[in-house]
Length: 174
Image 1: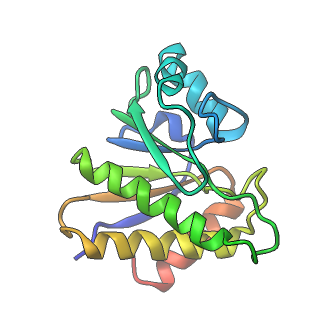
Image 2: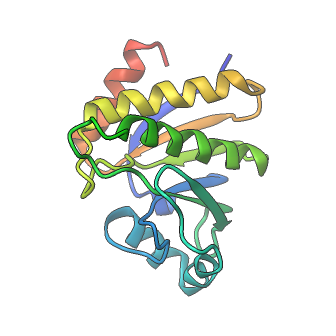
């Protein structure tokens, strides 16, 4: 049995989990939305650690300590900007989720929380992004030790986002 997947509406910076995922920009030095909130909550040590990483390409992920966050680790991933769907956006977004989970597994994390990657300012449509997120997480968990991750949380900013994820998870039996 794979790890339970669940969705909740909340502030990802307050979750007491092993890993939270940051929907970062390519500089990794902070920005708006969830990225800015994570950087503010983690404190200046996060920026210092991110400076040493040399940025991050779209679809890739890098990891830092959580510093002042309740989470032990922050995985920073850069989602694609939506350009109509014909420019490899789906593969890049799937890679964000897969690589983030692989880093969490490497650190022997038991819980991981994802924001809705690329659905804010980057403009990726919510429903296809959510479907891709859930499918990719399930695939990565199936390919690894099913007991290695105890819980995957999709942390939603809005009620509308939450409704989409809850509907997907109910439909698929989570």
